[in-house]
Structures are given as structure tokens and as C-alpha cells.
Length: 428
View 1 (spheres, rainbow, N blue to C red):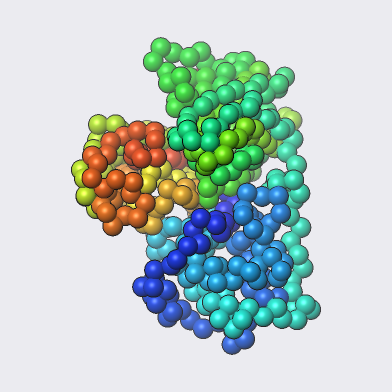
View 2 (cartoon, one colour):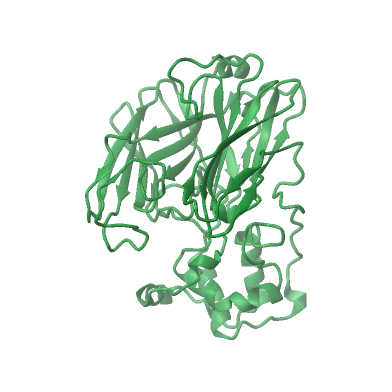
């Protein structure tokens, strides 16, 4: 399976006012320690759920490693954790269990709130847990075996949405199986999301007429990883992998947003390999289940526009993860398995989706689904004026790549339970 280390990011842009109704709703949380301190009670929470992003040399706007780092942000931290907007985790807590869930318990939220209300005391230094030895240089998983940097991409100060694509050769002289993939943008605020593809290579099937030239699919082109806010490195469990072919290239497919400043973006992607000679049992397959262009026509003012779309499982497979993709009007996406018996198994319900944090949800106990299962996706969009992110509730909204347009895509990763040999399947 793929484990993605998701930690909270307290973005500056979301520190503005919390609705009073939300604040009142969270006051009923269970009591934490009577007199919580930073060193004894709050720091362990930050280490477990926040510092993966909130430390030096990362894209987060501030560090939460020390008391001096965290103290000025106390009230903002309280607001965001009480609203369950931070850490960024938006799943219905009654559906599905996931790896690396950074969300806080009610008791942890109460502890942080009481600490702030009491004046944010430091506490006894002897009570503090040992500091976490985070990797240097921005790499969460340590130094990669291979680092590739994208060619320069110019980002205009006022360009709006832009979708450039660039490639760089891997330089590999032999096939290598991947243990992990990590993406580091240079200018994180302008990168809405980024998809990394493997293109070509010795033994790759030739592109066919009609293949998507942007690598949305097709022979000789394989999705490797993606990065969006709320995302994190991909690590592959023992026995599973993705394959980089000898002589292949890496394609960077960007969605960029201008932020009032001109930038030249250089993105690094770090690959960590299994030892030479190691052949995994299963290759991870990436699939996008889409509503399709014609099915997504959202009338003005509609608050609960529903789309249902599906994929049939042809061979028994193990489902690794689920990542919804929508834009400003997206509010919820569910994934159900309709088994051959007719039984319906609820797999995921991302009921507080926000386009600002496109989290990948990795199953703690990945479900194995028999051939004949139908994976049913249901998406919900809010095109009403009540949606604070809605750029224009009077518009008829259709499918498009711009953030002001819409999409409904369920990204999944899976592997077949009785696969062909990894290399032969990759080269079909």
C-alpha cells in the first residue's frame, strides 16, 4: 500500500475569523488537563500532528517546534483546531479508517483550547518530550537516492490559472523499483497541484493514436505521484512498488495560480529505490474515475448538485487509497463498493471537502474486492451563494481545468491480487 504522511498546515490565509456558531459548537468537548502546559501537554500533540509540516525549511508559514515558535499563534491555533479545519483532514469519522490520520481527538482539542484560554503557559522544561529528529533540507523522508529538478517554469504575477508541462530525463541505465516518491516545489503558494508521470523508456509500449498527450492515460505513460496542499510523500509497503524504466523521462504537469508576484518555479522530485535485484510482488496501478464532461452541468444557485459515476472491477484487486478532486464548488465525495452479491460496502465519505486541501486517504486495512464489484462514486457540488468559496453563484458551471470551472474525479491506487509479473504488466 501507499502510506502518505499527512500533517497539519496552519496556512496564514485561513486565520481570519471563525464563525461564532462553530466556536460555540466546539465548547462541549471533553475536559483535558486542568492546567495544561506547552511542555507537558501541548508539545506532544504538535509533534504527532503538526510538526511534519510546521518546522524550518518546509512550505508551512510558521514553525511549531518550540514554545517561542508557537506562542504568538495561540488564538489562531485554537480557532482552527476547534473548527476541525486543522490539521487538514476532512473525512466522516464514522466511515473508514486511514493510515497517518493527523486529526485530533476531542480531548486533544480541549487541551489546546484550555492552554490558550489560560494564557498559554510554557510549563516545566523537564516535562518536554525529546525533540523529533526531522530530516534537513525539506525532505520529510531523508535524502533520496535520485533527485530530479524540473526545467524552469515562469509564473506570471497576474496570469490566473496556468497549466504548463515540462520533462526531464531520469538518466537511468537500468529499471528501478520505487520505495518512495517525494515532491518539493520551490514556490509552494503558486502550485495548486502537480502530477508527476513516467514517460517512455526502454520496453515501454509505444503511444497509440488517441492517447492523451498530457498523460492522463495511454500506453508508455504512467502516473507516479501528485502533490496538492494537504498531500505528502508516497511510500510503498514491502512487496508493492511503482516502476521507473531505463531511459524514461519524468513529466511535470502543473496547475499554477498566480499570487501577485512573478516566480520562476523549479520543482524537485526525490525517488528512493528498493535494492537492486529486488522484484516486488505487486505493482501499484493509478486510476482516475471521472464523472465525464457531459455529466457535469451545475445550474446557478443549486446547493446540492449530485453526480454518480462508477468503475467495474475486472479482476480481484486490493484498493490502497482514495483521493477526491473537485474545485471551489465541490463539497463532498463518497466511495462505495457494490459487491457481486449486491451488498453495498461504504469505503469513504469525505463530507467536508475543500479545494484548498486535497488530501489522499490511505486505507489502514485495504479492502480486497472481487471481480465484478462496482466502485460507485457520488460527488456533491454547492453552487449557491451560501458557499463562501463560490466565485459566481449565478453561473452555469461546467467541466474545465480552471479553478472557477468544476471537476469530479476520484483518484484511486490499487493492485491486482493475482498480478502478472510486474515488468510484463507495466509494458502492456
